[in-house]
Length: 206
Image (cartoon, rainbow, N blue to C red; front, side, top):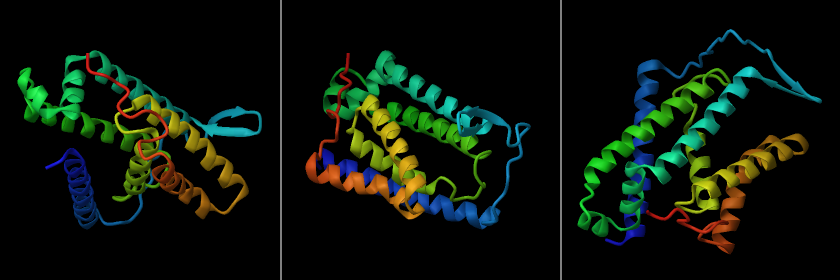
């Protein structure tokens, strides 16, 4: 089986599992939205005519810290190098003594921790429901495609640029166009530059 087929299968399995988990959680906890009350309330910082609540500032800081730690982990640790080696060539990784199953288990633990951090950052900002992060999964997938698979800095740049674009569109156009903007850009990138706006796989092993 070719690498693209494996990648597509992994994406489909992940999406299917997320849908199953979502509906199980909805069955157990109901779909009634809940509010996470914090000590900050609606307090925040004012920059010119823009007011940003402290919950959003803390969420943004947590996201930046997570991005930084993930980059350092992938670039400068043995675990990160093993993950990138397996992503580039599973057979070559096996030849140098890397255990793909063990690395995959650790990668799942890392992904779960990042998902937990994302949920904790989002909970004080929006209503908490079982499906609160579902739409973000598709946006994250679109950002990875736009930035380039395997390129963490490219994905970060794409996320910042598209976030600014969404804010601009939300201020001057209907909200539906704000939500659709990322996917319109993704479709355009797939047609014009299928490998992404930035070079794919920029982080080399070593």
